[in-house]
Image (cartoon, rainbow, N blue to C red; front, side, top):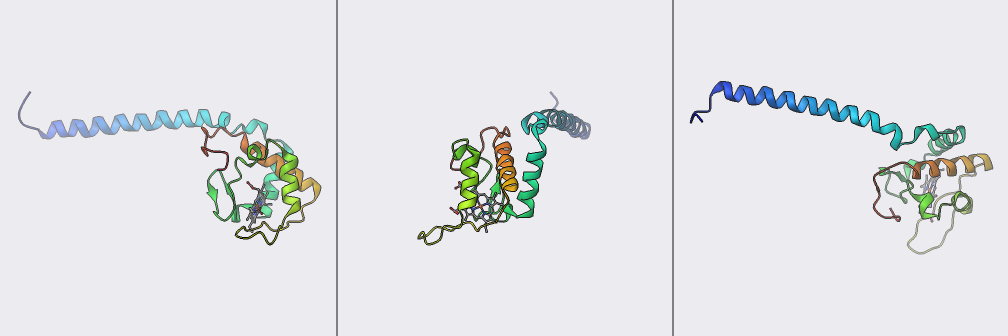
Amino acid sequence: MSEKFTKSMSRNIFYGGAAFFFLLFVALTFDTTRALPERDHRQNITEQVAFGKKVWEKNNCIGCHTLLGEGAYFAPELGNVYTRFGNSKEAIMAFIKGRPVEGIQGRRSMPQFNLTDEELEAVAEFLKWSSEINTANWPPNVQG
Ligand code: HEC
């Protein structure tokens, strides 16, 4: 091996490295595009799930809650609330209906949203759907 590190050697490393990482980038992008529809199970988005998402947006649930880590840190993570509530849409609906609960020391309460039964059921269905996204086990515990 020559002792000198020549200009052409460094050029080769630069072009070789750039080409390698560009190809890696393309391959990983392709892999992500292929894997996503399976992970977010978008084929299961029913009309009710879509309507639930609208209810979610209209009432700005994300203004207090996070959904899979995105959102505000005022109130609990809801990406796995369906699991946390024992795989029960009814429990979620009863919770939302029963708020606010005032006067518990050191605990904030969620306001009342006066959702119709249809809206309530849809937002619960949306949260059920969200809990079934393959997040590679995130958040790591059910309290999430
Ligand atoms: C103004 C802030 C705020 C908004 C907006 C809000 N929440 Fe909440 N939510 C809370 C707080 C605070 C709690 C936890 C305290 C409590 O009420 O027991 C909570 C708890 C919950 C829980 C139970 C979570 C658990 O693990 O105990 C669910 C389900 C929930 N909210 C759903 C919703 C939905 C759906 C919306 C939109 C329609 C929404 N929240 C909008 C503040 C909010």
